[in-house]
Picture 1: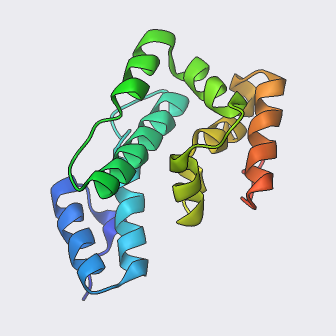
Picture 2 (picture 1 turned 180 degrees about the vertical axis):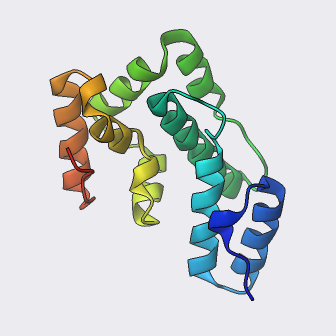
Picture 3 (picture 1 turned 135 degrees about the vertical axis):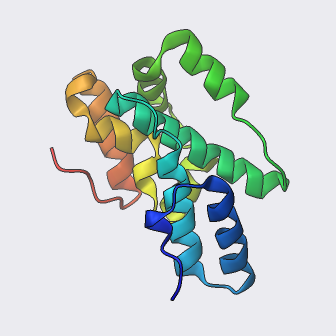
Length: 149
């Protein structure tokens, strides 16, 4: 019986399963492993927006890992979060003029729920209306199904 990534909690085991799935060209399993790795990124955070942002940062760092072939932290992003907080960071992402490569990669992989824009749309009551409108507009522009209001 195949392992079920959604029930796994050890990132090391998930990365091994991901590597095996990629080697075997099992894209469905690889996607499930990535999704679970991203979910675990914020597992110990109580505030739902901060938890989801931690998941988004985990996703971003995974994209960096693939791009550079080694682990690389999202140092600038982590410093910004520490400096201005989760809400301001997510607001800035949503209001950015251009989309980021991380946004595009996550949308292409069918994991737009790990983008900052999706988090803003998901927790619209925590953000200014113009920020929510910008996030929703970007998601719609890229064909992402919006979270329920």
